[in-house]
View 1 (cartoon, rainbow, N blue to C red):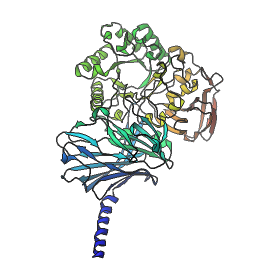
View 2 (view 1 turned 90 degrees about the horizontal axis):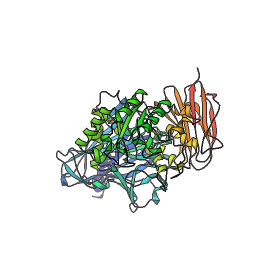
View 3 (view 1 turned 30 degrees about the horizontal axis):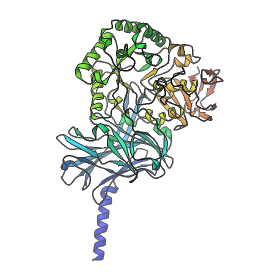
View 4 (view 1 turned 180 degrees about the horizontal axis):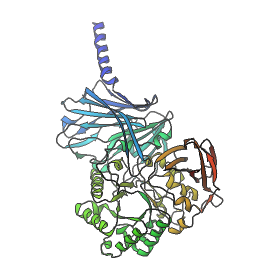
Length: 621
């Protein structure tokens, strides 16, 4: 009997291994893997592996709803699987790359609960990371009570993640995961364990609330939780969760260069995107809260954009005669068409500004959007959303769709984290969700600093465009910057945004020794190449537009030597002009004499604390 019992036990173990041990999807290069397992209670778990290193330990997947038939906590059994591969290329009007490459292995595993209801777990494995989502088969709406999905990180994991805040406008401090208190944290969350990097985020969130991470230090895990406004919500049928995304690599370049979040979103339904024109914008509000009230002032910014070879004016239309919140005075202002006509003569487009309280209904949207088109305005910044609720996510979806119908480009402020929306809505050019240069105008509020700036390229800006409003040379009395002039100069080359909003006053740019470089700032790049860096300490990367390359470096609070291997450049010789910190580093930059370099060279620079540099690289003839 003992032998028979052992045989039965062994058979059960083999059955479990055969159905769950084989549930593994690997990336095309074999480095990244996502595995699923069922335990003896029928509870489903996943884990994430990169290069043989476990970066997410066995963590539960599940769902609770108001309908017992559609609860997936335990009692699950494996039903079957289907597998496919993705191999596609697509382009977007703006982004860190012109051509997005999406290659992945995808397997969908189907499970059934005790009520004979099924769930499909779609597992996506690519060379830059893995992701999964759950698709349920409900035919009528459900009240989702919570996801049971969690993240268990290994011991000794280091993290860079943001404490919860309503507008994503705070910092990503470096902390040991084991030291984190119980509480709510925002994605993206960058982690490092065993020299493997992992950026945790989500993708494809249009009709449901966004998710956060709730720390449970007692059980050593994070739980995925819905936005505070929607701890429970009614979902559409059939309900599909967001993609749970893990960008992976043994080098930070895998994270910085990744387009996984866009790749996990559906392709756009727009057949014509020629009207979508990213570009560099001038931003009068930063220099004067009431600048939008005066046509003559705005014309000086149009002249600035024209002189600097930039493309856009941000005209905060409903801030006429008010500094911060929307008014309706613009509706009776007769000079707006004159301003847009003046801008058009100079080759400058105009986008406006309003807030969600005006635009969250059809009547308000149609009125503002139609009036904008009548007045010659081609885009809109929508502000004060400040929510991850289902209502807010559906508002963004509707606003982008209606704006696209009217050929309006969109920016969102007071905003949530991008989750790949710009693939589906390429007219969405940028989002805020960052503590940027506007904080220099807020007296006494902790502003952006070099540590923060050196963390953003590894966290916030990885997952989508970022409206930081960079390159502010003027030192504001309200909140003086601590970064150098060259550090500020490097920011529009370090940070990526479909509308690069240059925030300073006209004289700051027109008299800058870096004016020739500033005239080359781009908002849509063809290629990105990460060179070196570490979160919070320094960043050095290269961007290409056409045949033109730029190398930009920003430094944190400690002086350092940076080595730049030019091997990423096509073979040949190049003219290199260096803009760097000089003796008066806070107020101006030094322009080094142009010299010829070769792609086989390595350049070395000493960068002062809080400093930066930019190298303008052009192929010799």
